[in-house]
Length: 617
View 1: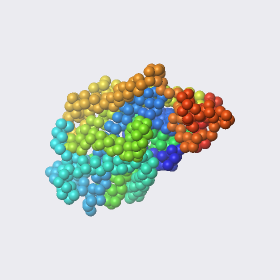
View 2: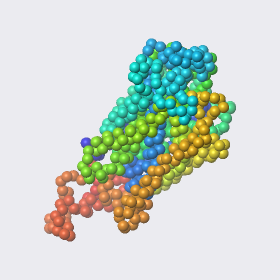
View 3: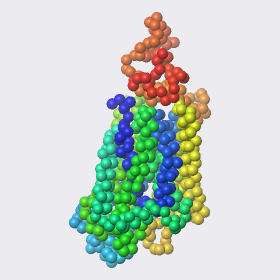
View 4: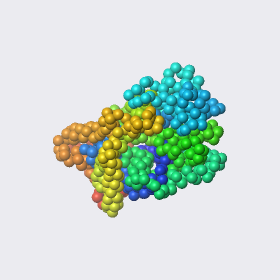
């Protein structure tokens, strides 16, 4: 298929952007201030970030690492560090995706919800269908029957042995690692055959997930008490007199934005690359990404509102949760309490599973594409199949990610989930500022309009400084109050006075936070060795890369010339001069002036023809 045809069209891109609502299943707003902290920074800080990244990815047809390698080689280690950080996030999220898929099948396995009956469990002495939330069946099922949480993080105690279904009892092995393997196999199959195939698969998954979610939403608003639903929504979205610490609320909303909207991740450049080089498409993608996030980011909260709102007003001592217990404990309890048909429980968890799976696919595709892109010259040299290499790299990334996440499928897995998720916050400010600095250098070196580069460059810089500053202030507050320890949640608390992991695990958390920055060292070493191959102007090549003029002269990322020789621009009597080099070797294709792009071409000149982007005199 022609290289001029982008992997994704604009319709596919819009539909794929639906994935950005996946974290709303877990995290809920805590008042109007939290909502403002999501949407105001989205416009003021998110727009310039995604505009620059999507445009560079589309214009240069490179991922984040490739963009830095081309114009700022010494900085490509920052792109590698961003990929390492994304890999850790994917490996941490994948076990949760496996749990959502498992709950979807549990929901339709029997006539009665397994998680709603104390008789289905071996913990009847602590299970009380009418008791407080901690002793309710759904809570006991998730903690003691499903996760089988150990007493502390050091007691791994193997994998959970499920006894709540006949299939699990007959299997003879723990099925939780198997479910994680199934998730990664699906990701490998979806991603391994390239961006074009993956785009069509995601294009089908997104409407399916959205349809399931809207089905659950419609049933809840039609069959449950809407008064309690409205009260619950007011609690989530209205301003309250006792907002508490304003800056803390603001940081919570901003954190949700950073982890769901791809502002400072390698994802944006790669998505821009897949949408092609068209100037019109490049100027539309950022609008589509922002608009879709505004439309769908709160859709899971709206769908869950009838169920959680009525549950909180049922007099059963539940409180609003904004963590994983919201979807894994409170929603199952609501399905049981209000006798929701099993089909709706199934489609709810199916929608959550599909949307989080989409993020896994997009993140994995970003990592794989950056790796394959760096091997492009090796692939061309050895005439390897690009699809085969892409599939192999996807398989290797899957093995690494599954290896990192396998510990979360043990009985101490939830402790490690908390350890990883809270570690990501610590040095987030540094990743943001490093990515922004490199992208700013690359952006101003492009042949875009001068006014655009000045305005967007200034806006982009302010966005990066504010985003990084908020994360740095968050870290400062933690250090000031000595609260960098890993905080436990209601699922892992065994005693009321134990709210944190032991102190030594704080150092492990810092090590996890610093691990991605190994990529900076690796990238710098590789850039130095690459520059040393050319003895002339090593420092300039290392720090400045190539210019836009050199890139255009070399034909980098432009469509290849036709196979037949170009029509000569000199009279016949000049053929002998042009066709022969200094040593007399005959070369039909060497008409250098035919492919020379002159300076009078306006910025972002589109090709004169589809197969030849040169200006022919």
